[in-house]
Figure 1 (cartoon, rainbow, N blue to C red):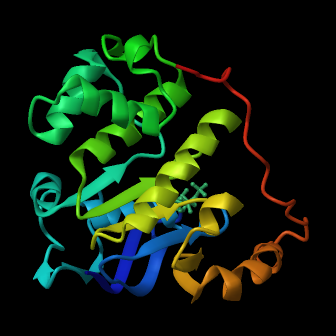
Figure 2: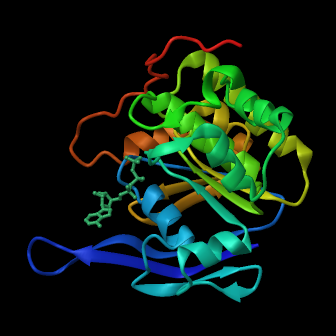
Length: 258
Ligand SMILES: Nc1ncnc2c1ncn2[C@@H]1O[C@H](COP(=O)(O)OP(=O)(O)OP(=O)(O)O)[C@@H](O)[C@H]1O
């Protein structure tokens, strides 16, 4: 179980003061729970994920994982405890082959069959990618899907995915949604937190958390919250400029079939 207690994260502001990004946020994510965090751009979703992973340090408040206070713990130690994080914009590793990256994530040399399975879960063909380097030659959507495959291979107790849909084509997104649905249905005690703006991912949630201006504005099941989400998004606009419905997927890649 993950417990966030009165989390505050502030950064220096241009006027010499501070800007509060996460504002006294408390949230509990029980085991075996599929949580989707959604909300407007700049609401603090990625920052919250970085605080949980230890990439950023809270100004105040506490983070507990399975009862252990991990607030001051290093990223690697949090990873050892079983927290995995997929970045909104994943890193590339020049010189590192996809197969090696999957092995490192799993903590062992994976059989080819397992590699095929992890890559197929993100809509990639093993034969075309296992020997590729995770460098600039891969497209943004490919790197994103490879990173998701590494988290699947690591199989952490708590997996956090930051906008897994970003830059991913419609066909691969279908496969990814199926994968998340399978994880959801497996019900093996693991928790998954997905930061997403996509209706199809949001609809899979046990609980939706609407994050707005660094605070939890609402929580609820898809049935409770989804009808309000459009309304909630529009009410956030403070410039009198109506927010459009979130854009559908960007077709940045051709379909990948194997
Ligand atoms: N280190 C920092 N210094 C200054 N501002 C920051 C810093 N980190 C985050 N912010 C600001 O905090 C706000 C929240 O950023 P964050 O990336 O968490 O939003 P988000 O909800 O993930 O947005 P999106 O939906 O666009 O990904 C933004 O206005 C961002 O510019």
